[in-house]
Image 1 (cartoon, rainbow, N blue to C red):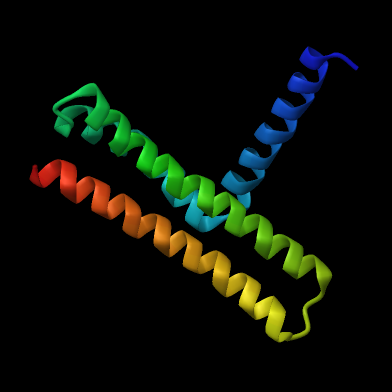
Image 2: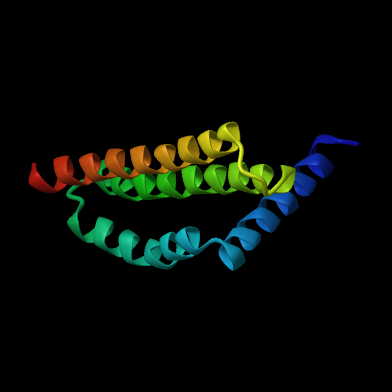
Length: 115
């Protein structure tokens, strides 16, 4: 299998994951819905191309972390529905990662907009 064939296959799997999250993950659906608005606001409020990019990329960072959190939750749910300390911890850590990404994004937006 050559590199291009593997790249095409990987891209298909990636799009399948994005479509699955867009169909079944409410938080990701919200972030995806807000993305065009974020892009417009970032372009309007960012004074430089770098600022605009940071504002947009910070939002995409939230979406990446949300996808990883959803993947963790899916694996934990696949293992079983019974309560287990490690399952709860895994889900809590994924949620904490999303919260951290939101805080990072908030800081970036505040620094750029208050500058």
